[in-house]
Image (cartoon, rainbow, N blue to C red; front, side):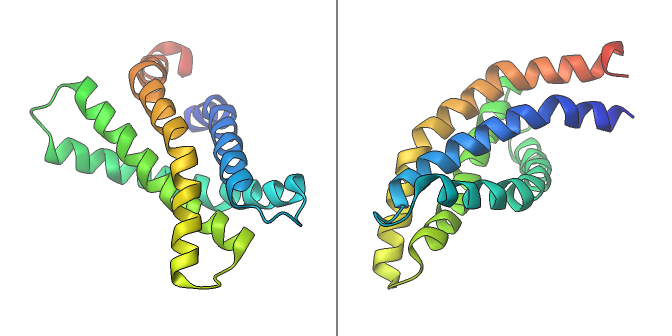
Length: 151
């Protein structure tokens, strides 16, 4: 039952982040002849159905790796490294997929250029969200889930 409560608490945050990142990346990589909303909805659906579950698994493994590689760092430092790593990894994957869905693969150089533009447009927001998650939300969620209110 505790896992269901965690999902209910985390799902709106995850959906907001997915919606924001896919909207930014779609607006950068969309072709002029495509309508924004259906194109964004396709990217959002993929991100929600594929990236969110795989991101949860990746979150766990990146957290374990950060704990193992940086054991002497403070919890705050490890949280920041974890958050920034997740932002870069997940947004890179999302930029590649969104660009491919919106532009196809006309050539490696053009694809890489468009994916890079998409990533660079969303990365500042991703880094800001990673810092917010690492410094504010994650500690509060951990406290909430370890207290009796989450049980």
